[in-house]
Image 1 (spheres, helix red, strand yellow):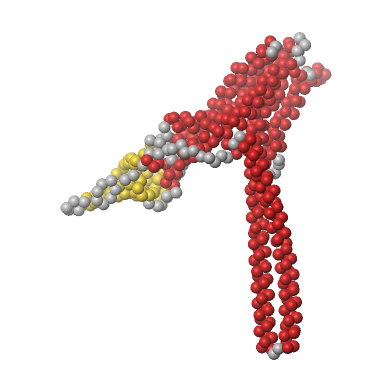
Image 2 (cartoon, rainbow, N blue to C red):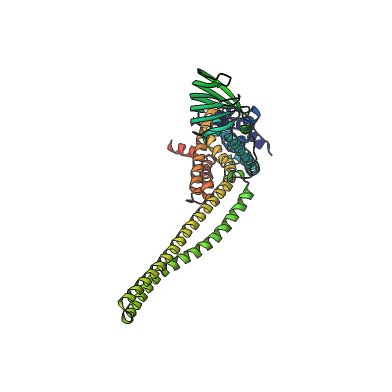
Length: 468
């Protein structure tokens, strides 16, 4: 590596670290805000909460690295241009391509590392994050009881509970009736129009806060006495070990939790199933057409035979026998036609069901292909953003991080909208998955190539000279 290459790469070190930490902080704050209410409502221990944030770091890193590359390249080349170092390098016979070469090599190596990261680390961390979130969802205070809304919940510790209405977002309850069986004798009945629910101790303890309620109790003694009292606020702690948070393993993995090799095997398997499904579809369609033609032919044939037999019967038999033969043949013809109609409807339903299976399987194939190409296209954005950021920074010629970060966020927002839209269209089968995932890189690469030609050959400066 030459001294010039080391100098150019050194100029990218601090901007890359700054951009990476900034993007990491922004995305991590978003995750924290999304999960804070969920974690607080469970009284989850700090290690489990940190573990949840740690597993969510994988996809954050996968997005932060390409964005940090764009920020670093923009800031570095903008500073070089602002200090006149790019012009000085060209005056000494060093072309812009030579200044860009170490950046492109570094971006290419970073692309390879991110491909390995997205293929080997990201799926496992996504899987762990989903399993952990599922475990937390099972212990969410309102969700624990949501399915039993309006139904008595027995054996909740020493209590039986009835909640008529539950708000899963705020954990607020309405229409609460509580039976306390912890004491011998008749249970203590507590009514409250509203209250609030929270889980403590990783879900093992339920904190039930009641407001503006009343208590009814029968004293079981020699002289039975009825007690009635009211309260403004009452807090109950119910111990229920069955609600304790557990990190349960799961063998199921979605497309975002599989590596490229596993998804490729699933794609081949689904395609093989599609071939067999199309074979069954052909046989079902052939049977449907056969039944349809048989239905028409059989009806015509039976009607013709019935008329002929009627004519012969009228000639040989009396009117009563002929009428009996007519009714018998009519019933036989009707039953035969009905049977054919039922078979034809069954074949049509089997045809529609087979098409639905084929469509769902094709959708799964598209999802796997989208995820495969996404694991490759997002890391490749490091290389594409290096090609875009270098000439763009040279044209901006401004120091400071504010402009570079703002432009980088704008460009990445456009890139991400392209990616999200392409993924949606590919999942629905409107465009091929490879085109959907690589189109943003192709568009930005073409734009970067155009900007590189402008900066490398000083075309902007030449136009300005001619106009003068």
